[in-house]
Image (cartoon, rainbow, N blue to C red; front, side, top):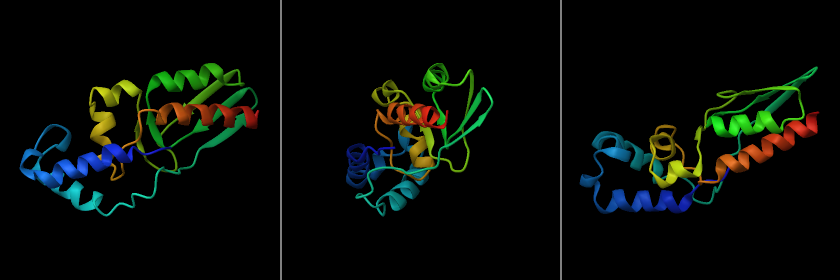
Length: 146
């Protein structure tokens, strides 16, 4: 799942240039912003994506898809709709926690799930297209297992 390293670089630069302005909103508060910056400046900017486990189990006409995120319902419903199984359950927060996989609008509007949660989860933000990428791969995995 691809990271938005351009956004991350911009966040790092904003904090570094003026930490006193990073005390609310996407920065939560001054202490949180400082802790985030100290961790984020050590991240490997060559790592362009997050690799995390996805599992699928078939039980008769039921497909179970396990993934490590809080997936916006639009994508979960798309996975269920396009699944080859009569019934499909999309189950998050399994085997890892990577944060939210949001819709592109969440990045445009600066929603908490897209901008703040990656900081809380101690990882770079995802791209606006990451949930779509995940959804395509999840549907392909369901097809393969069926």
